[in-house]
Image (cartoon, rainbow over all chains, first blue to last red; front, side, top):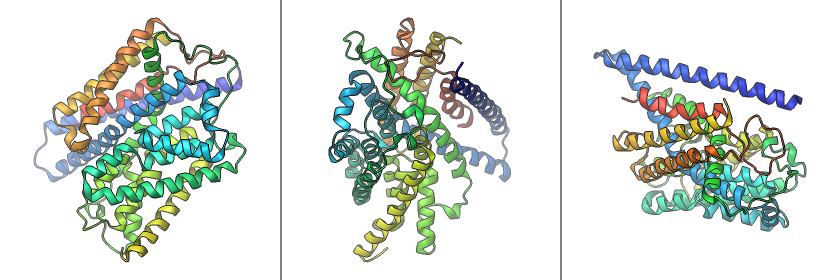
Length: 348
Length: 101
């Protein structure tokens, strides 16, 4: 057996053991808290413990439930590309002209309601079908910041419309900038993980437009695309759920203190809470601030581009170095754009 | 475990997850977890998961896709069925059922 296959099966065994341990810990701890809850008195320690567990469940399930619809849409879009488009067709859309390919990626990210999760799922499938990396990057970034579902949510809830507009504008500018930055890099294999790379298959897509069993074929493709990313969503939600129970009540939004501490807290909150692209807007709108504050803008941008869940999903597609560049640039553009917005508006 | 069995269990896992979403929304437990305005999307996701479970289950008799043991050339960009992915599906259900009260 080739060394790569041995390594893969060894990784598979270890990841299986890891998930089984996680499941066992969850079941034992869950039963334990159930028993405590059944016998719970009025002791403050017991109530504190149960309250912490409750906050963890709300944090975890909230992130998971927000991500799931966008994951399904992304898997559907990826399934359509997988089953109905040949590699040649995808390449003709996405790889001849630099501006055209970035434009198509950007338009797909904005027009298809993919969100941060769905954008990454579709971006990976496009890469595997031979689309250029700048196009996939433009799609992933624009989908996380500006899409039709977020626009609908923002129009429906007026106070956050400016926040959506700001995030969408910065997201589109950042998507174009990052995509152009990637066009200068010719070694795609150095930036993208091996299982997300375009590897021309020895058997061509001869059956791809086969009329028989179209829906089952699409459904199976959807499920398999979804299963690839499900562990990253759940792991991100677990980490965020655990982190959210740690901070004291004094470190919850809206943040107090100097402008620097407000900005740092808001960006950390955006990164750690891993809310979805609609959830971020609704959360910022619920902070009951007068007008749109700079901390809400920072939270919206940091939450869209580099939250824990998004970083985990991106690491499935891109190499660590690429994700690091993306995160650092995203945080830089978040701070710069909020500063400029504050200066133009004349206040923070 | 062979590929067909994994596919069948995956279908069951998806159906359980879909039903779990319905339980959350029906018991109004989800209200605390996500904004009420996102609830219709959660219900649609539950329906979508159940539909996918049905498709996955009916396709178990026609194994046309790659499995984790296949090594030959393939014309699909599909990843294959893995037990680990199936186990991950259980995490949100376990947390929702055992920890939420």
